[in-house]
Image (tube, rainbow, N blue to C red):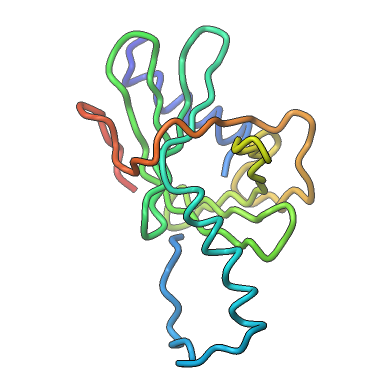
Length: 169
């Protein structure tokens, strides 16, 4: 099977077997002097947004890696890097709601399909993401399961690796 055949199947299986609009700027401008309560509620969201930016990776037992690259403006790239060959990436959209625990993550697969899931950043700096049991149209999981996928942050760079074949949004 060629890489071009593997990517769609992997994306489909990752999304059905699991997965996840942009961090759009709010239409309402913030007041010039926000109240203390407002500042306290916005700080955690900004902190999570900053922690997410960059490349997060999880490897399967065969050495293939599945990576998410969280980029500014709500762009997310799902990257498949086989142990040999060229990397493929699918452009997605994401939105975080840090007001909830675990943190809510919406991943736009297309203009009409969104996967709703949850995640946390551990004390060790890993991301535990509920992929299993998520697919477009399903309700958001209320908690992380013991089978949540663990991702390690491998880079703060929010750009695709060189020579990556991109499947646009």
